[in-house]
Image (cartoon, rainbow, N blue to C red):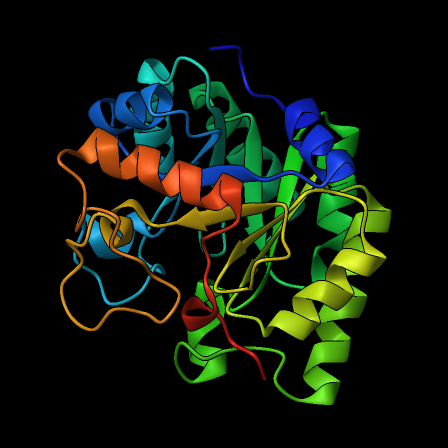
Length: 265
C-alpha cells in the first residue's frame, strides 16, 4: 500500500471522501491496522487509561508516548502516525519544542494538541519549525477537571460559538488537521463550513472527513460502560484484522457513525 500522508487526507477533504483512524500502541496492532487498510494511527494518551489503568490521561508522559510511537511506527507500512502531546508537555515554548522533537524523532508524522483558541500561537510555532499539527477540540480529556467529567461539548449556543470560532482560528493559523470529540452534529457541520483542513470525528457525527475510535473500544474489550459513539466491530468479526477491515469499510461507505452513535443537540 502507498504511504498515507497529509496530502492524502487533504485530497479526501477536497473530494468529500472519508478516511479512517484508529489508536494503536505497539507493533502487532499497528501492523494489523496497516494491513487492514486503516489510513492513520493515533498513538494517543488514551494509553494511560487502556494500557496503564489510570482514571484519566493526565499521568501520561512524553516518554510514554515516544516509546509507543516508536513501537507503532516500526510496524506500520503505510499508515500516517499521529502522536499525542501529553498534559502540560507544551506549557512553555521550550517544552513544546522538546516534546515535538522527541515525538517526531520517534516516528510521528503529526503531533496532536488539545485546547481551543489558546493553541493558535503553538500551531504557528510548530508550523514554522516544520511540525505538522492536529488540533483536538470539544471534549478534550486533558481538561477533564475543568469540565467536571467527560461531557459532550458545544451544547449551548455560546459553547458552540466558541468551538466554531476556535476551529476557524486554528485553520487560519495553519493547523493541518482538526479532531472533534463529543460534539453535536450541527456544531460539526458548522465547523466543516468554516474550515478547509481535514476534520476527524469521534462522537462528532457523520459529516467529518475522517473517523477515529480507540482500538480497545472497537474491539469490545474496554471494561465498564461503553460510550455512545462506540461500536463493537469485533462482535461480528472472525478476527481482529476482520474487525479493523469492517470498521474501515463502515467509515468509508458512511454507515459509521450511525444516528445512534451521534449527539444531536
